[in-house]
Image (cartoon, rainbow, N blue to C red):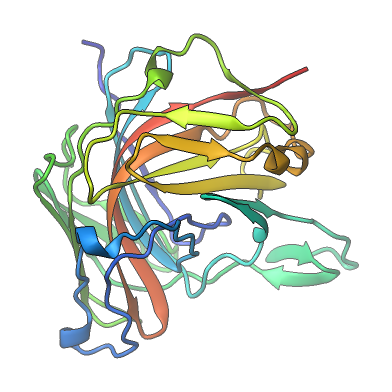
Amino acid sequence: MQQRTPAILLVLSALTSACDDARKDNSSDATSAADTTGTGDTADSIGDEPQLESVAGSVQLTEQRTAESGVDGYPRVSLKFNAEPSPFLREVDRRGECRLLTFANSFCDPACVDGLCLDGSCVPYPAGLDVGAVTITGRETSVFEPLADSGNFYASDHYPDDLFVTGSAVTVEASGGELAPFTLATIGPAPLETPLLDQQGDLTVAPDEDYRVTWTPAEATSRVRLTLHPHGPHGFVEAAVIECDSADDGLITVDGALFAPFLTGWGGCGECPASTLVRYHRDAMTVAGKRIELVVGSQVDLYLEREP
């Protein structure tokens, strides 16, 4: 067994949009204790249609593997809370279970300092949102404390290599700050099994050709999300992203018409960021007008290659 390498990404502001399913969840804007507890996944709330939305705040726990590497899963914890969803990636096309988001950087004079140029105007980066300390309870309990005036968190406790147990509860409790205290809860998904784990070499995509991703279905109450990233500029907003959200039925087909604009943004720092396929459970709610979520997933990282 190869060594597991814990990874943690603790950021408040993010430039990319989130691709999510809408569960049976709390939509009240009130901030009283009675209205700040999420409702979790239920089988009858998933529906047949993909639910793709952007959120202001997200806590994600994923156990990740990489296609063709043979490396055992490693844990990743990501926390981000913004005053609003990122405005930079915009949906321009939707086909079946997938949507295409693009970013069109424009020219501003003077140059933007604390934001990006969009439609000829400087648009500021989303401000961070103070939610206080965040306690995550899965296989073990870990506390993440906010760093003063930085918009970041640090882990005050060790968190385990195995973040959750399939079918067991995972909860997130925020102590409160700009938002009232809130709780989100869901369950750990079954491990994602896909032929992509045996894939040799990068996955090839081409303009106008449909792209099929398969996996072994597991649960009626889980969903599967595919996010495709071009080889883009490191640490910057990508020119295009494809997001797909599906019932856990074993197949996502990406319409080839989405790939022509997607591939125009190809280039940059090589194979970064990784594309991902993740089986997940989710809880979501609205607190004081801010849409927030908890996502617990089993993830496979993928690397794409453009067909010559």
